[in-house]
Image (cartoon, rainbow, N blue to C red):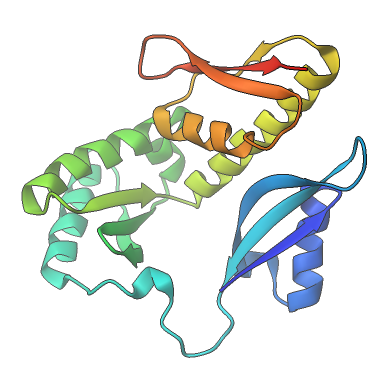
Length: 216
């Protein structure tokens, strides 16, 4: 299930969710939403939470038919790839959606498997999707470890909001760190409804930078 909550900070919004639903923080994932204006200068942080309500319902993530043979081949491929990197790991299915399969890597060496800024994890995912394309061109695999991707996305959006506030009140544009296309799309989307600024990508490489620009 999903629900939306808000607060003066991300932590307050999370606390509101925990208090109202009576569930532990570890039992749900969050998505940062565009802020909600509550005054002339103030905005509340909004979050969407994903949680299991305990009912015996089939979630949206598990509606896609299970392709056991396909999943087994992909899991074996990823496990073998990590073994050839010199590490032991357990690879399991984390979610199933139409034309998309989520895999989670558990390992004592997860920090190395994730790599600096997730670069190793991205490489593993890229190589895996090349393999997957030979099995089924309509399928895509998302690979994560220790919930890194969600935490990383939350950090990117928090940084974007903070920088946008600085740009709005200083009147000076600022560049964010280089990001891949998916990360840039997150920022552009998150700041769409942010008053007083606009965003544009700069650079010629895959990892471009987003410039946040003040507007009247």
